[in-house]
Image 1 (cartoon, rainbow, N blue to C red):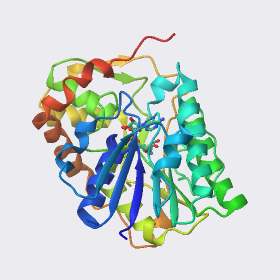
Image 2 (cartoon, helix red, strand yellow):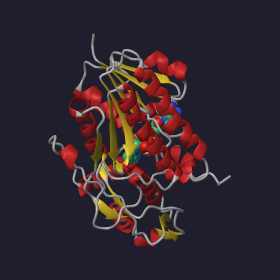
Image 3 (cartoon, rainbow, N blue to C red):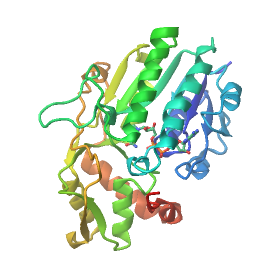
Image 4 (cartoon, helix red, strand yellow):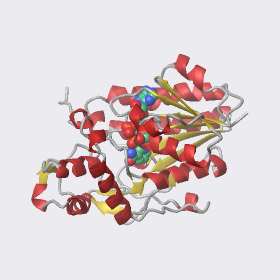
Length: 330
Ligand SMILES: NC(=O)c1ccc[n+]([C@@H]2O[C@H](COP(=O)([O-])OP(=O)(O)OC[C@H]3O[C@@H](n4cnc5c(N)ncnc54)[C@H](O)[C@@H]3O)[C@@H](O)[C@H]2O)c1
């Protein structure tokens, strides 16, 4: 029987790139995608794989035990990408984040606990669980977690709950903490696609605060390669940072985007800072690099390719721009 992998959130940004990656690199595997298709999940992100024999799609909620009990048993691998992911939304709708990012992880882990076929459960966490990192230092996997907004706090909950299922029940769990991803199919509420698509339409790009917050950019292809490697090399009970090694202040990122789109810097519109806005994230990825992984996509090239992808895929993002507009706090 061929190897079966469950990819939750496989219709979202990173999840759909990962499904493409697995379909390409492991054509004999059965890939089961479980996705609720929230505003961020798009069936069309997988449209070009419709003919792929091994792919099946289940629309459902990871927090729904009945659905999870139907799809998880028999899977050798589970990669849990499913999450509410937008920090801004978590500021006024935290309950949804706790429900999916923590309770949903719990439902998956409970099913994993009772699944003898399971070889590895990869819980996709984030660098944001470390909180804001001082200039000059980088987070290591053993550092304390100091999440400072409801998104990162609910991710930290899922992260540690997954570890507890290893420590308590021996579920073979690996936790990953990646830095900010960019690339094709990212929902246009996140900073890079938001700014690219605004700039294409000559809409001012809203830059938070002084623009000096630093993010470490990781191309989604490099992230997919890292998760794939961990399916083989990841040691149960361990956590792995996945950093892009491209720390860029937001103002520099904005200028690069405007230059690539061919628009003037007068499009930059300063807006008040986000509450609890972490100043800097920075990862030490030495543990993963010891397996031979390193990012392969240089930032300048990856960013140019990403801008070109959004230029070439207006039919994909135009209908999503309405949903990307932030609903009012309430
Ligand atoms: N984007 C980044 O920069 C980044 C960085 C580090 C870690 N991560 C993590 O990677 C994962 C994927 O992030 P993304 O940027 O692709 O997110 P995304 O918002 O683009 O996609 C999330 C997907 O999960 C699905 N989903 C949401 N709630 C669900 C539920 N209850 N049941 C089933 N499916 C559900 C959505 O429909 C969507 O397809 C998340 O766990 C996120 O925390 C993201």
